[in-house]
Image 1: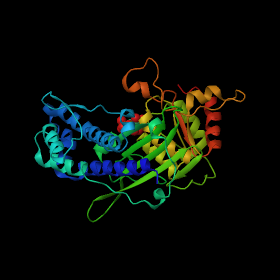
Image 2 (image 1 turned 180 degrees about the vertical axis):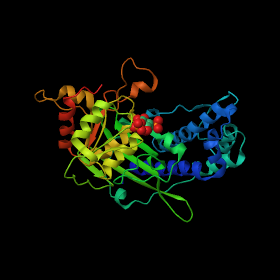
Image 3 (image 1 turned 135 degrees about the vertical axis):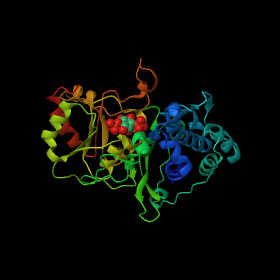
Image 4 (image 1 turned 180 degrees about the horizontal axis):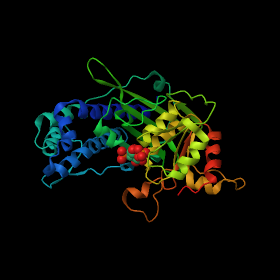
Length: 376
Ligand code: 2IP
Ligand code: CA
């Protein structure tokens, strides 16, 4: 089995454990929901706690992967910075320490001196997670790790994670919002070509036990490298008529054109990662987004799995420009180059929007429709 895949699956599972712990353990949960009690004096403090689950997961992934693959350590990027400001205005660097006790000590300072919360988290962070995955065991691809980079989205759809709605009714299998859209995304890309190579999507809140109320997770993976394409999910069958999933923030022109094309098979869902996942599970054929507010850490992992299934993610604006030009290839999203002149996270935006697909013909139909409207 590719050692890197094995390491990433383990750390995605550890991340999902942290995401679940934070919602299920009373002391930690109270920190997440404090804002709802209207404690205004704590506003900044609570805001920080919201991102702390993200920051912590990102650091755990960096630490665990960096330990096994030191050559990757400087090339692991993600949404969050590990500088965390606590309620007293102190800046603390969040990191995984050498021992469980040291990590607990650091977390104690961050978590408003809550010893219980600090210890609970340190236990999970320092736990060895062993994954038994028969399909992954058969993977023999040798990945040139010295040429790879990693994008992490520790908790995609953070807002839905915080709100934590569990009584959401799916429409044709698609959850429009709620806890189910919170996902851990880990994507590996080739630093030379910018192509996605390995994708892991971990869904921490896959199923809830109705008696214990405990959540069980589920993960999906795919590899697309040097002509080898393997995935933990089968390629979904194409549906007789084309369907699309959109962000509720999608612009009106796009919505109108796609609604003419897809009719009642046009869906809305929260979370960029969750919308990609709807394609992998065969609930929808395409995901279209014309804005520039998804980032490399949102799309890298799903992109690798889609590629392994014969699909992909196109740069929407670039494809509309290229379409019709003879012999021109439609541009796929790439992961290795920042946008010149952009600052901070915006350097890594999917600036031209995107179309994700399993079947290329579906992307072409969508492009034909969008070609005729102004989408911006
Ligand atoms: C967000 C999150 C949002 C999504 C946005 C992502 O990531 O997935 O839900 O917007 O594109 O960047 P939308 O739901 O409208 O598609 P995060 O939650 O990690 O900030
Ligand atoms: Ca995200």
